[in-house]
Length: 135
Image (tube, rainbow, N blue to C red):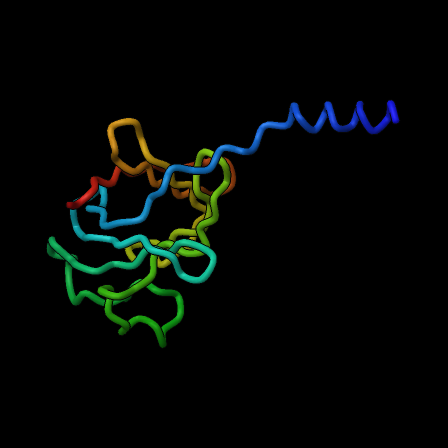
């Protein structure tokens, strides 16, 4: 009985993990060239380009994709954030860079000012963009 009481006491000390702040909505990318909408896609979150704002230096297609068959697909409607899962105080998934034609590990979280920090990482080296919310 003492063993049960000890285990029950320990379980009372366990604090539930903090959930990441929601990131759904429409966001202006850090370079101001597009709008990305983040929404559920199955049990995870994804983000797709819904609008191009600035000149993208040529046709608005995925022309830098390593797969020649995908180079003519339009950028508008393209999922660039995929597989994002709640990882406590942040969201983790993958980001596709149409400018480089590469997929990177990504971490996304809300800053205190309401902006979104979007990190793309290769190994331990990361680059961060700040995306602004659109209302």
